[in-house]
Length: 319
Image (cartoon, rainbow, N blue to C red):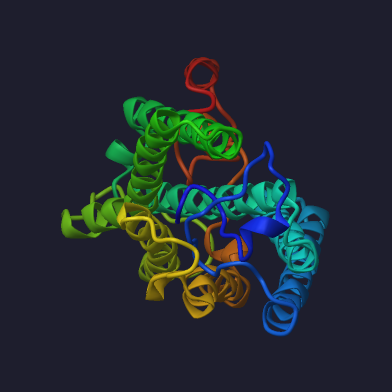
């Protein structure tokens, strides 16, 4: 994805800043005849899935089962409803560059929620098959560091996107592109981590002290995670790959800048992933006891602790 959005008619835009882009981006400028009805369908689907995940979260909370991931999925759907709304508004305000900036930022930022959820699921599978490794405090610290880095990368990339709309200096725009290339590459790497952890968990001989969590077998959980991670890799990989392509002018976009590519590599995989999570009932598959992180065990969670164990648990809280 290019650093800035397309424009269909340069003369129709104000002189800026912010300045409109002269390079093509995936999907191009939305049209009222095609993009508005198609985006409205996705908007409806995201609203339905947001309500579904919110309902699942409330029902589980009544049963004293706090599955925060359902709330995160609902939040992601809400972000996408705003994204779709902005795209529809963009179709009726092609010269509003500020609207375009907001739409592009939300389109990029929303996916990180899905990538983080997959990584959390992968960590739980690793802890179940290899407790000695999965519950190691060093691994926990490493994953937390990755979360912190992805947050910083997102902040830098968003700042870069905004800056690229407020300058015409070629050197500054070149630096912005390099930063964006790094950011999209790191996000792609982050999206592949769950699959790498999954491969390690299953290629290595299972520990004799395997633990069980949630409903269903570990194999079923792995298949769900494999499918969801593959969809996320498709999304992140397509965006990173397009970013590395030479920017094309708005009047001569490449095939990967088409509207079909925008929807097929963006909203469609997201909807499939959200439907997968709802149908597979990840709130039951990946359910863990609330205090499992404190005792570093899925099976010992909820059991009374001795004073010594309680001290050790307090020291490792949050790992």
